Amino acid sequence: MGFASIREKLGYQPVLLGVFALLASGALAWVSESTAGAIAAAEAKDLRDSLAEVLPQGFADNDFLHDTVDLENKGKTVTIYRARQGGVVKGAIFKVAERGYAADIVILMAVDADGKMLGARVLKHAETPGLGDKIELSKAPWIKDFDGKSLGNPAPEKWAVKKDGGIFDQFAGATITPRAVVKAVKGGLDFYAAHRKEILGDKS
Image 1: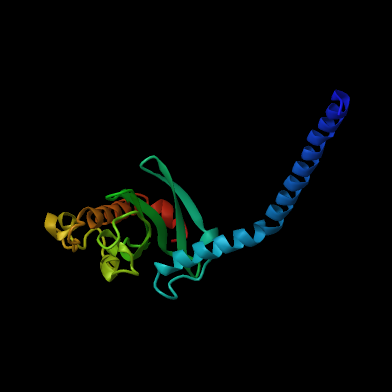
Image 2: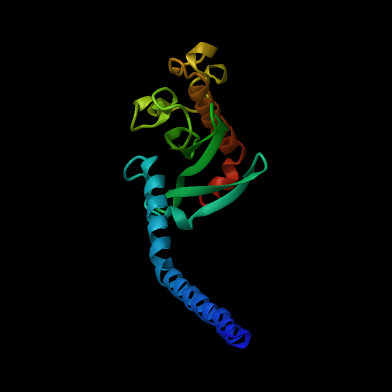
């Protein structure tokens, strides 16, 4: 086999590779385009279900995903989902986060128009399994202790775990975790109180 013959074979291979790459890219783009709507709908349903989980049943009759306001909290943008009943804002749902033992603990919390806790759920954490994961409702009912609480109930100095003089239970061997959650929820109530008028809007 001469050099010319080898060069001829080498010449078409990059072209062939390019054709296959182009076809593969086109196929991926088509699949992505055709499934984007279904994926977006599934993500919206998951978010809507998560938001509804921290509200009492029948509390709101609006679509939270299309009734939001963005505000700044500690240099980060927080999206607040408004819960309305008959067009009137009755509450707000938003995320808060605080550093736990291993990483940030992300919490979804809901308050009524007066700033009283309606519910809280831990969305994300990396706490020690069997110790710190009792903040999950699936592991223990501890997170429901926040229901009905507000900035005045308990008194500000009681917004802490019992080890620190507060009213909330700590976990054996994992005090850092509940301490972080208490701090996060209290911070969320402070944030709501500071922005209550902006969150409720003119129709409240």
